[in-house]
Image 1 (tube, rainbow, N blue to C red):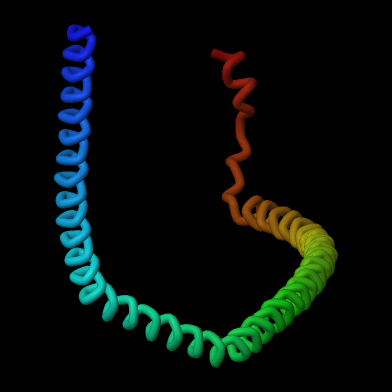
Image 2: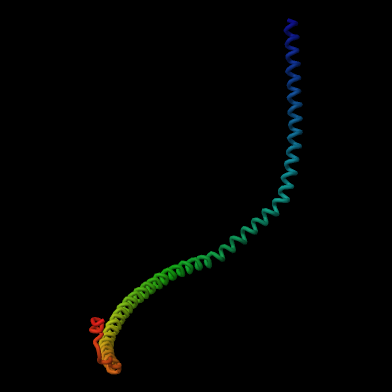
Length: 176
């Protein structure tokens, strides 16, 4: 049994050593955790000292922005509604202008057609008048020209010297 006792003693010693090692590891872990906690606290304090003013400034900026938005909101709503009314009025005016432009274009087209008809009728009348005047002037002028040509021929014939009366030129050939 002494072997059993030795074995039990070795086992107890091994268990005691492992318990001591565990306690040592726990102590080392606790010390390291304490140091880590201390470092984390220092980092937290540093962060708090730098972030707190920035957060405070951001909070103040947010509050002033909210106040500004609260003050401007009614004005912005009024401006948006005024803008919507102006856009609606502009649309209506655009429609009115378009209708007026269409009406003016239609009137201009009708006047152009009317002027075309008047000009065509006038030009046809002028053409007829020119033909009438042409006929009225040309026919008598031609007749007068014919009469004058006849008078001239008569006068030329009367003014021409008379050929000698003698032998007939046709008979003269026959005698030769």
